[in-house]
Image 1 (cartoon, rainbow, N blue to C red):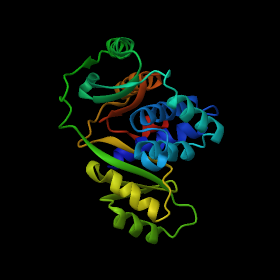
Image 2: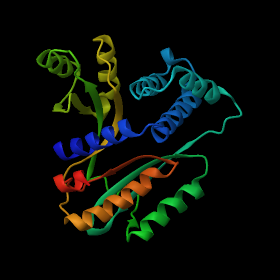
Image 3: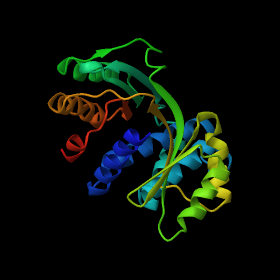
Image 4: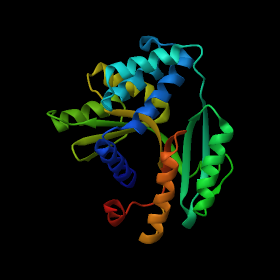
Length: 245
């Protein structure tokens, strides 16, 4: 999963350099809205809200902003959001999976389709990328002053099936069905993840020439910037030269 971890590292640094971090906060607020609409505004009895709050803290969201988001989500006049996914192909055989939360399905479909058309991509049918991506729980944990070996053992005991280390972080992966159990085990062990979520991990990577890869990344970046988009996953190999760009 090292290719995936490289892209996670890029996104983490990109977020850290963004002084306003408005896009990151917007995504978390949408997660909070869905969580509260589904299970109420008490995090003790709402695991999805508890996770969203933990991710908000990991992103250094101010307490007032977090509480305001919870209160607004609990307001019956706040519009509910629906989840949408798009299974796409960029040029050069790169698979792209897009996850959205939206209050207007038509707007979201039009926006994603417009970007794909601009870069020669196409929409696939539902399920067409099932064999390319596996859904896994991903926990990004800052090492800090912790003993590395002891932390790794704690993660394995909590249910991690694979652990990667890079730039002062441990990234732990678990099967999708074990996500809730691992989240609870980490809480009980006093280990705080800076970010925890279900992600789509590519099973195989596609190698693309550098100049072509840059064009694909421009498309992916444009999709990510859309307000309705929560996450974008791809299976393009992240070359060192491309990461430097």
